Image (cartoon, rainbow, N blue to C red; front, side, top):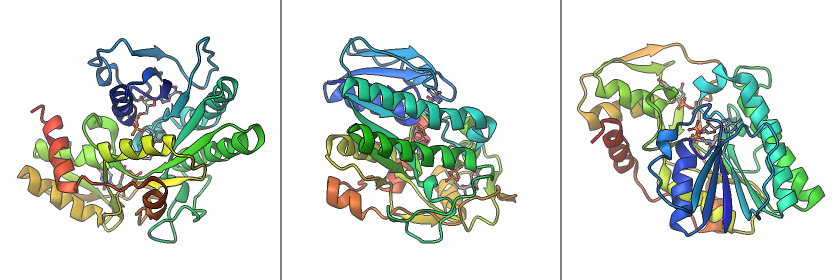
Amino acid sequence: MKVIVTGGAGFLGSHLCEHLLKKGHHVICIDNFATGDTRNIEHINSEKFRYLKHDVTKPIYFGDKIDYIFHLASPASPVTYLELPIQTLKVGALGTYNMLGLAKEQGARFLLASTSEVYGDPLVNPQPENYWGNVNPIGPRGVYDEAKRYAEAITMAYHNHHGVDTRIARIFNTYGPRMRAGDGRVVPNFIDQALKNEVITVYGDGSQTRSFCYVSDLIEGIYRLMMSDFVEPVNLGNPDEMSVLEFAGMIIRIIGSNSKIVFTDLPVDDPKVRRPDIRRAKEVLGWEPVVDLREGLEHTIKSFSGK
Ligand code: NAD
Ligand code: UDP
């Protein structure tokens, strides 16, 4: 099958391209390298793989038949989407519109990489898919949260109105090799700081919670969702929840670092809790994470230390 991966030079996208190639598909990676890097894909040595430098907020046409479109293009870290607020809104809105248009024209199946951020600062924990969320539309995170909520809305509209075959993955915090040290998310920040024996920057008092999914588990979930016949959103993430402060301690212990923890300001609207309810993914996809946090972190730390 011929598959497009937008955002294919990013962290998740590059792992997805490799997974698709292993499954025997032809893969076209489309990326404008806003937050991605050619180094994530330049090692891929396959005649079934090619990449195009293109901004998906601009339309694109293909002569040959496309079967599947995985739409991952978007800044994903709070630091980068605050630096790129307009691009983030545009890629969620115009980028998703263009890729749905391509899917419609091609009769291709379309999967949206949505996010747990559609639940905002949630008032229920864990978050099931039928929770509508608690998002501040005009706060700093609104540029990402509302772009993804719009992307979900237009995806369902193309499904209901145009009959496009669509899937929506609500991805929760995922980590692994190829996250950028400067990306600003908690996993690369803490690992980079601990490896350099620098202070670990815990925002707020560190009592806010997250749950971390290893990249190979997430990619398997995304692939299964695309190959399923399930149209409603599906949460994909690891339900093993911990506080950010506990997480900092865990990174220090695994690395054996001398880093000390410092507490700095909590970003505006930082969600206080986050944990996926994955009952739907279990039932519909027969999927649940299998990589335990310590094992996943050891792989990730190795990749950061260049071993
Ligand atoms: P990433 O920043 O590593 O990858 C995003 C990729 O999209 C980058 O390669 C970037 O250059 C590309 N991109 C951005 N704007 C583009 C545009 N206009 N045209 C073409 N390419 C563009 O981030 P990631 O963690 O790999 O995230 C991938 C997707 O998964 C994103 O849509 C993100 O919202 C979603 N997601 C990720 C997580 C996570 O924990 N990693 C959680 C929830 C949702
Ligand atoms: N965080 C932190 N220190 C950092 C980076 C992040 O304490 O150096 C916290 C952040 O405030 C949030 C959690 O870690 O509560 C996860 O942040 P991340 O940026 O990875 O993504 P989010 O889950 O907020 O989208």
